[in-house]
Length: 119
Image (cartoon, rainbow, N blue to C red; front, side, top):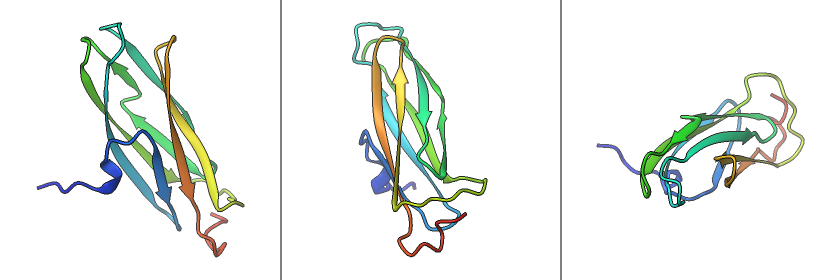
């Protein structure tokens, strides 16, 4: 039995609180509410400082009006050495079909003690 996590509520925003090496994955469901039954949306990621963001799938291909599709987004502490000098860093994921854009913000909170700020 899979238990629901608060992060899996279908909110249009993403938040992560990191300390050292860490990652979080969210599941989202989106619905085609536009007039184009065969809409194709590509994901464009602006990763917050200090993290890598992956979206799977990175392309949503609708073939019917009101069709629902799901995707996952993983936010992970960057594997390369970075210096995060702020308590928060921000980014976004934007889905675009070339005409319409749907943007969801990404917010990352870093430790306030500074120990994990240099990774």
